[in-house]
Image 1: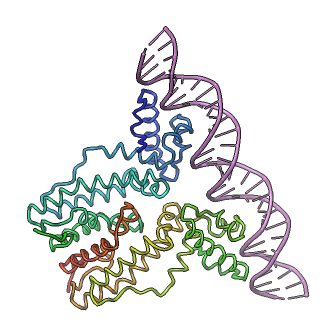
Image 2: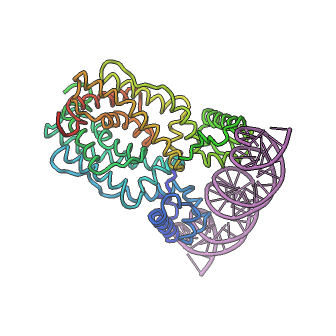
Image 3: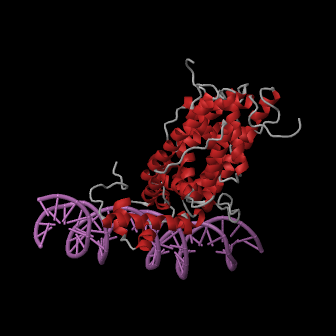
Length: 203
Length: 203
DNA sequence: ATCTTAACGCGACAGTTGTTGCATTAACGA
DNA sequence: TCGTTAATGCAACAACTGTCGCGTTAAGAT
């Protein structure tokens, strides 16, 4: 993949500085004026880098956001650990809800951009895959505590818990409170305890 | 609402004919060349209506798709009735899966357009609200058959069953088979039988 | 210190999107 | 039949998007 994150060819001072300024301008512009105001020209003009340079390195708005996300995705985030499956899922859904409703709408912007830019779509996929992989431990812990069957599929359970949030907030743009997000977590935990999300096979 | 569907002011032969031709061209172009090729100019040129006219009546691609969907939403669709909750949900998810993966990608196109056009977003919301309302009968029948508690919230259950499909196919763009869609339906049915999706209160 | 060349700056360009003012057509009412 | 006027056609326009060729700068190597 042609990572704009790691050109690696000539990571000199100027190139790195350009990237820093461009990504900072992207974030600021997104926070201050929203996704609709986010354009290559606006970003370039704001940070004093030439349009052509931005186009050559990031190609489109989706590429910019993908790079912003790539910076943020390399963090040390770990899923909540409250001692119970329901507690973990509630805490997780509260985080997702917060990410979708408060602060810089990076997630929302990236979803919107993912429909126009293959780069953005791929970055989003990678980000979520990473997050779901990290969260698998929630399900494994619950299985070890014998809260749920040992052959419960982590990803299926986690998607079941979080998908309603994305569905209501992103796709339906319906008012969805943090309380409803918690309810979705409890519903999923109840289903898992009853044996949903299990895979066929031995043991 | 300023319905382009029903101008009602002068529904004369020419105006109606223009709408018919524009919407037909929109559908055809979407089927033949996909969402990316869908532009006001392309639609206008294809059906011999002037660009300005399309811009004035539909404003953007989202407006066109919203009108196309409005035509399709007034149909006589009814949710499946197989005799069991799991069977109904499986059949429903098969339909959703088919709508998202085969045939004219109207749903997918409208989701993409909903991030650019308020009209498209509103049309999509109205469409899904209508669909979920119609599907409530699935849950009511299951409750009458005593498959699930009587105080099960239809919408919450239905969203839980279908949201994973949209999440995987639309947001994550992951390969999601019809079999996985059926699994999501079974998971939801199992959870509902165990008492998930119930609302507090009497009875 | 000097060379090489990747990255950047610059101007020009074509294509798309969406708007505006004005002329023309034709639907509806009288 | 005839007048009113909504709807359309038309051309020009600004703004944005993305690309290209070429000259300049400066990072990394010798």
